Length: 367
Ligand code: UD1
Image (tube, rainbow, N blue to C red; front, side, top):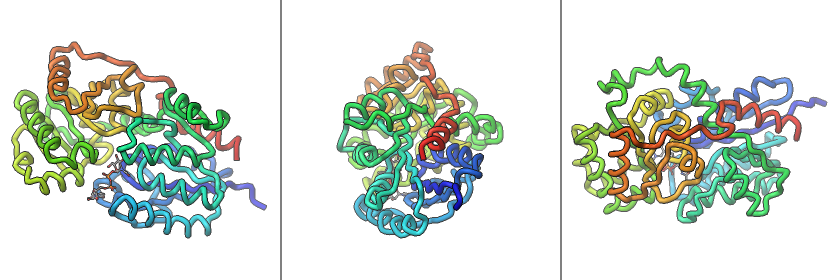
């Protein structure tokens, strides 16, 4: 009988890919121990949100593509569950690994638990304490159903302990996304995004915004767009715009903003180009989770247009400031950045590019 362990990794949307890539590589290095099956749910299907990331992160093609696409939360989650169950029954893995907090993560966790299979959650324990965010619901349910909790920062360990998670299942292994960043940063010179956009280093801000709480409400969205237009009069803003945001801008009749000269809307970028754009910017304005971590590692100022964060270490130790939708605060921080008085920050413990190795070591010993 073979001792090879069958591991299924499930990914679905953009923020999953950079977390999975280093772990896939580390597991493949031990092909005498692990056989991996990569399942892509197809939650994100646009080339720029999916395939481009597989290419940039040098990830293998998925072995199984479920093609679930968009829908309401229930539709999307249910579709992943129905299709994934069939696949897991065939593969009968020793371990299923999920990442982050997207609907595909939640769906996989529920299916795995009902099939009484073992589940590992990479990026466990993070909490925004905001149950109106779909991601918070996804995180809590996934953690409750996981047998291995791989955590990026100390706050996550505390959260899990407080929720009664068995301490022996909690491992502070660091921020696995930084593994991808460290590897890809070496290839940053391969990106010609600054030339393409005719930008000089440190002459612009980079913006991302797609959270339902920011873009699904017309007044709030318009308030942000106006503020960005004002800021961009002094320093250009480059905005790789997520399809959901563009859809809402069009729906609310706010498309005039997309034609601004200095507030520049561009297509969503791949990992290498976005990393290059971010690393050479003056600062980043965002409502993304991952980018708060990336900017802390890169020591680039990050102004987060949310009132909470699931990664408090990026505020307490890193370069992040929570600005919520307080435009005055945002402008005050921009002024600090312009005058060079914004905080420098430091890189948190275990954000060193070796998280995947630590995760694999633990899996090897435990299954
Ligand atoms: C999802 C994640 C979010 C993550 C984000 C990164 C959940 C609950 N949310 O949000 O945590 O930060 O991905 O992008 O899982 N769309 C396209 N093309 C695509 C995918 C989506 O046009 O390839 C549009 C569709 O109109 C879709 C909408 O974006 O309805 C939302 O997509 P969805 O995957 O449901 O959530 P995101 O907002 O992308």
